[in-house]
Length: 245
Image 1 (cartoon, rainbow, N blue to C red):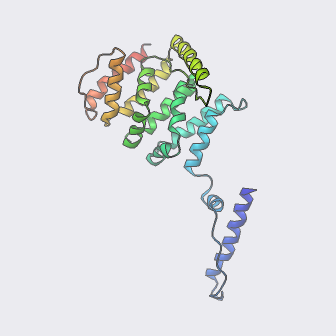
Image 2 (image 1 turned 90 degrees about the vertical axis):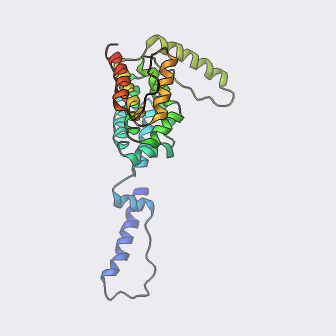
Image 3 (image 1 turned 90 degrees about the horizontal axis):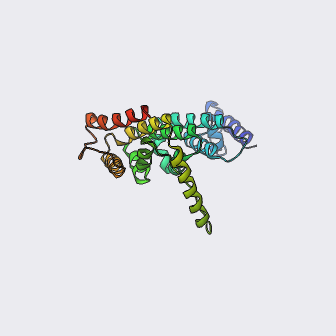
């Protein structure tokens, strides 16, 4: 097994390098072995944060019927804690995890939509690189729609020859979502994520304001993303509407 192999390498390395403490050891001893990534992982105590993040998203998005909702929520909670670190939050882009995370905002389970918004809000807080990625991928507009009470349609990734079927499925999903609307708790988390996204990052605030106006909302012109009082005014209005829903 891979774990046993790593432990064996670790033991071999330990024995060979213990010669440093033996003054009688010949200087012309054979070259000492180096440690593989598996053995280093054994020393460090397990998988890296990047591996844990990838595993969490794979678990959450798995279609395996034996994986329970409770298990997926636990994985999401772990992911949210991991991205509290700025370095780990920046790994989302390098690991290609932003796309599946944003797609989870449209999941049929409201608890997973809530956790997706929560995780996004944590990842973009006081972090310009992740705020930039959220804007670039259209995440701000998604959060605005959710904050206003719209259910996002489930996005289907189409392969070759599946475009027509996927388009029809998306239209059906959009119609169903529009009829249901978003839940109060998910709306509140979307507002939280939006608040984190727009503070001190002007492109995100501009994208949010544009989407709000597009949806018939009155938004003050020229709000400065560094003006916390002005941003609070915008966010608190959305928060109150979610609470009153």
